[in-house]
Image (cartoon, rainbow, N blue to C red; front, side):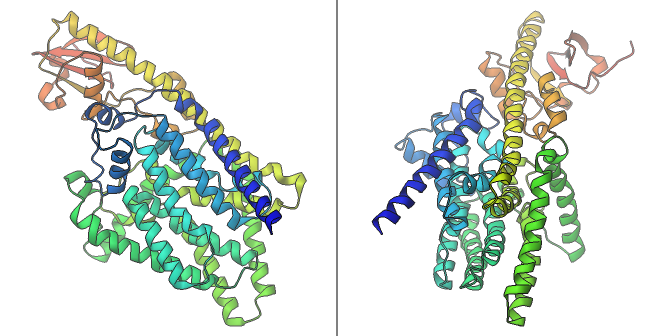
Length: 497
């Protein structure tokens, strides 16, 4: 027994070290970039976040604990490093549910939880990255321990999922997908004892955690128009609700498939074939090993439902919202379907050493995508700094003061970013150039460069661009001036004088 415990402890340490170091390698350019992503700049100058009103009280509590009650100063990349350690630890515990042997294969099977291209946006936040990592860890932790007791299954699921929701609500979808994944794996591995009770407990825990969260956090803590609008469920007639679901699915699925519209799909082709083979083998196991006809039909029904659930959990409850946030960071559930693919490869090649390299393909692809994104964001940051300098100089040449500045069109990305986006279209949805209209952090970026000029609406700045004076042609955009206002025109509006 002592020898067995020592071997298990050694394997735990080995898996954690491998997963953590692989994650640091994956994040290395981000950890050293110093980039302030979206809300980060506002948090870093105010020392405050809106997380309580967002319905994320534990996120707020965690940071206040780290700051010993003080204002929330920027401590990145410590946030990303701690987040990497947190998810790595959860993956290690979960990996023993998948396989008791080996170090590399079980970790790579679950690594898409960390390296999903959609989760790149979550890692990019200097503040939120840590709290989102806690949400993900809490969402998958219940599955690390098989429970034949339905009460324990309900209790662990409810507790962990409620904790996850209080850190970041979108991690809910990962919990849903793993309920299906674990059932399929248990069926394949013939771990049939208690699997129905565990699944029932997970479903009950999902419903109970959401009910508790809705009746407490959502009812009494969530405030503000933005948060209420983006958390309001579709209502009205059945036709109205279905219309909302269809519209949301069109937008969210377009965002999901944009990750595979370029080079990344080539890294996943062979693993996807393996995952289809794995499903076939699970079906075979059900037909050959399940002797009780009623249970055989039940297994078949749950297997078919599980496949649908794994895909549907990419979007989850987002489909039911009147106005969901359309951003890659909310597709945490997409990690589930990617894990199912890599997990299928790991299971099928566990005893075939010559084929184990296949599981490395999607991981390599996600590394290539991530590093492409990091360099695309870095060069776009450099472009943004150049643009601010050009804008500041132009305003100075026009007298140095202005009533306001407006932006027309979408801020450009760097040439390097456009090339990366051609290879990996999802990058275009993650890259941030702050100099856009109505973005508070855009104004903060200008102020950080010493340009004190109010952001105004385009309608306030001018009703007719051609009635203003063209004061700058910088290739990617024009600058117009008139009546003390300035307009940065990304659309390069042409006027006939």
